[in-house]
Length: 89
Image (cartoon, rainbow, N blue to C red; front, side, top):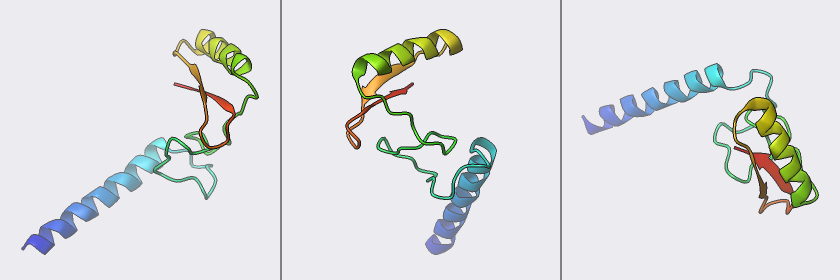
């Protein structure tokens, strides 16, 4: 009985993940883009490579520009993987 419940739960989770990724993911994303992008992922949610900035000033200037353009607050952060600067929410 417990095994059947576990199998049903696993199937439901898989269906949800595939439904969600198909609905919210970019259908043109590259094959290597993971559904579970971690903080160290170097792709955007659309599967494109993240833009890297050589220094904090350049990244903060871009963050201010994007915030003004889109209205969503953006900030610069130093990447622990590539040791460069990125802009994100």
